[in-house]
Length: 263
Ligand SMILES: Nc1ncnc2c1ncn2[C@@H]1O[C@H](COP(=O)(O)OP(=O)(O)O)[C@@H](O)[C@H]1O
Ligand SMILES: CC(=O)N[C@@H](CCC(=O)OP(=O)(O)O)C(=O)O
Image (cartoon, rainbow, N blue to C red):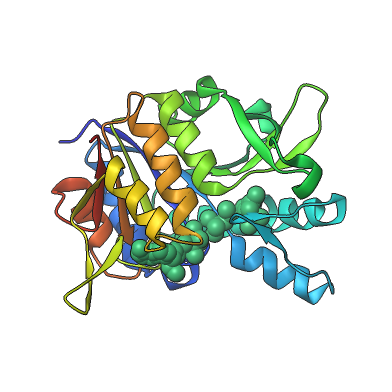
């Protein structure tokens, strides 16, 4: 019987590809005493909705340029649509889930990023209200959190979901964060063949970013992972969501995806 609390970050890249068995596995883990907390993304769905509204998506270092109109769409898609879809799928598996936006109960406190002049209402996390998350878990519900932040004045911020998940994991002091995405782990070309690295250290990550082997959406993941493991989180594991059974195996046994560990 596990008694372990863990944070699972679910990327927008893989949400549509998650099989029902993924949510059955989540229920099974909860029944066995694990206590999952979910933080989700939804980047592709935001871009798709912005496109339908005739608004172009623009990214600076992997972060979306967010003006007031974009912020409305980000909140609508993440907290309104994706969050509710995940809650419904968990409930269909037979488990209990409660959806929350990071602005509810000031769950995710934020301030503008350093380059806000350039990218607008994008936030860095300054605090996480762990009491609410722990209360929801104590009631037997799986908390499902949308990465929208809020500051003392009530201003909302768009927060990268990997960053938000890392901040939640650090604040809760969980042992592990599992990052579920559309690739089976961190890939590296070895002898002309793309392979999943079973584990990487923070030093290797720096090298792979510098060489361009880690790029785009993988950058906020590894940066958030490195920040987490500098605190109380023991390891971060990056796995693919589409492969049946991978998630449950990653939690119960390990040996799946890429583990990011202290150097
Ligand atoms: N070394 C790498 N190994 C695997 N994927 C990588 C690597 N470097 C960059 N990526 C990219 O990161 C993507 C995952 O990030 P992203 O698309 O933002 O997903 P999510 O929506 O799950 O956060 C992969 O699909 C891949 O294109
Ligand atoms: C500031 C910023 O870039 N926020 C992200 C939030 C969603 C997210 O991070 O979704 P994924 O996990 O699917 O990438 C965005 O607007 O796309």
